[in-house]
Length: 457
Image (cartoon, rainbow, N blue to C red; front, side):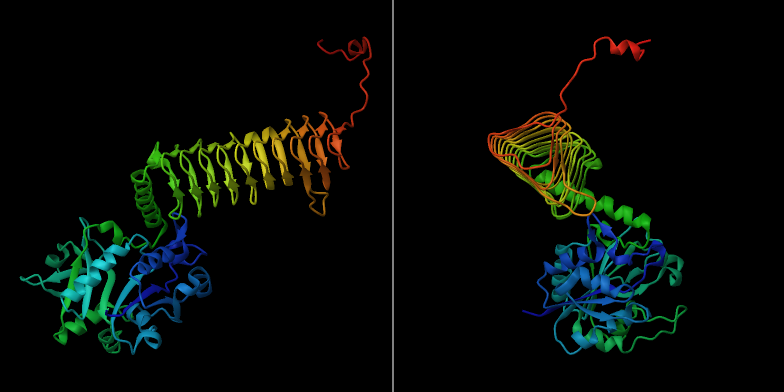
C-alpha cells in the first residue's frame, strides 16, 4: 500500500482573532482547532504527520505531543514556504501527502479518505479538494475546461468577471505525490503583490509540466470553513455542536432542546439519558444510561454511573455512582467520589470528598477533604472545617453516623461508626463508636425578659 503523509499548516499568528492565544489553539466544542484536524487525519492511519508551527510553537507541541513531528517556519512567507519546512522530514520519501490547514476544524476523516482515493484513481500528481458555495466571494476559483479538467486556480483579486461567477472554490486542502510536491516547491516564486510563496502556484507548475492535476468536489461545503476571526469561530462552534448533538440523539440520547445544549466532542452519553436545555457537558465526561441532566447543569470531566439525576448543579473532575441524586444548586468540586444511592441535596458543596453508599447530604452543607462512610445522615448547615488558615486537614466519618444540623467538624477529626453528633455541636476531638457528641451551652429561659427588648413593638 502506498505510504501516506500529512502536513498540517499551523504557523499563522491569526491577527484577525485579536487574541493572545495562538490561532489554531482556539477551542471548538472543547478541543483546539488543530487537534480536531489531527484527530481526523489519524483516522487515515498516516505514516507521518508533520505540523508546521511558528508563533506559539511550544503550545501547539504541548497539545499534540507525540501525535506529530514539528517543523518550524520562523518567518511566515506563505503557504508554499510553510510546506517546504517539512522537506527535512518528508523530502526524500515516496508516497502521497495531504496538506491541510490547522484552522479548518470541521473537515472530516472520511472526506480526506475520499480525496486520497480520487487522487489515486486519477493517477494525479496533485488533487485539490473543492466545494461549491452560493457566495464564493474571497475564495480562489477552480477553473475547468469543457471536459471538466482543472486548468488553474484563480484568486479573487485576479479573476475576470466571468471567472468570478464560478462558484467552485479551493478549500485549501490538497493531495500531492510527495516527490512531485517538493520538486515543484523548489520552483515556486514570490513575485507577487505580497512577496510570498503560495501553495496554489504548485498546481500551475505541475500543469505547465503536463502532469495530471485533479479536483475532488466534496458535497458538504461546511467542512471547508476556515476560522480566521471570532465570527467564523462561532460559526464553526455552531456547526460542530449540531454534528455532536445529532450523533448523540441517533445513539439513543434525548436532547430536549438541541439548539441550547452544549456538548464537547469527546463526551460519551449512554442510551435513554435525558439532557435538558442549557446543559453544558465538557471535557472527557462519561454519562451512563437512563440518567437525567437538567436545569443549566455543568459537567466537566465528570464520570456518572447509571440512573443519576443532576438538577441545576455543577460537577467537576469527579465520579458519581449509580442511582445518585445531585441538586438542585449543588457543586461537586474536583476529586469528589460519590458512591451509589447517595443523595446530594440543595446547596451542597463537596471537594476532595469520598462519600459511601446510601449516605444523605440533604442541604446547605460543605464537605471538603472528607471521607464519609455508608448510611450516614448529615444535617442541614453542617460543615467539615478543613482549613485552619495555613493547612488543610481531613475529616473521617464512619458508617451509620448521624450528624445533627449546624454542626462544625473541625479537622483533623475522626467520628466512629454509629456515633451521634447533636445539633449545633462543634466537634474538636475524635468521637468514639456509638458515642454521643454534644457541645452546647446549657439553655436558660429568662421569664418576661423579651418584653424589655421591645420585640414586636
